[in-house]
Length: 353
Image (cartoon, rainbow, N blue to C red):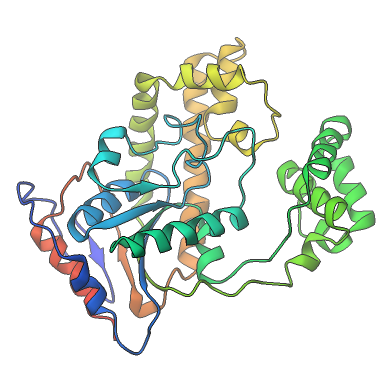
């Protein structure tokens, strides 16, 4: 990691790997200015393959933090390899929560995650640790920092109906049906966005009110003071990392993971069934794609997704301008922070005024 910017530029290294000193968590707590009595929480965000997990782990080991998953796919129990969840070795080095906690058969969403994250953050604080939210799902971060619509659970009957109609009618026909009963929501959704169409249908069917109307009833931002480290590496670094990442996933058992997921015979519209790599490796297992072709497609789709992530993060504030640090490089293989980087991060955290 060689480029870190916050209202300027300063070079960084990841040297001095042998240092193991820790920074007492109460020092970080004391650094929060008295003008804001909300407890502190650190966000580590960026696109896929930017090194968020490595950086979050390095910080957590130094400050006594708890890493809270903020990746919508890493919540699924059956997808450790394809979602690049932290390894058991990493999980043993610092507390990790909200990883692999939901079965693939149950769709997660931002409202569900917000409730889980707030509980996990409070538990970390009660244990004397700083919550470190790490991930690349922008809508999850926004649910905490900006608030989210208070949409009630539509119930299993409505969910089942939405999935059945999606299979029977297809996304475009179901979208047309949605436009008749909830035109405000339908106008916001593309006719081929099957997941969002099904979600909108189930909300209308289960609650009697459209999703757009519910979204006008927004929960307030979480009562925490957020600091953010935003990883924004060059695209060429991400492209190279994605290629290496897929090869490593194959070696770690990605094909076997997808085979086991397919054996569950789940609804293909579920988020876990649409995770990057699942449809492509499923096609390979059916004999419809060679492994090489599947790999190229996964790399292409993942690369396109990282561009959308990078664009989202550049146009949405994770924290205030003075509470945000930008690192314009990938973090690679870091298990301990260099002393120089440690000092800069703590200067960033302590220097808010």
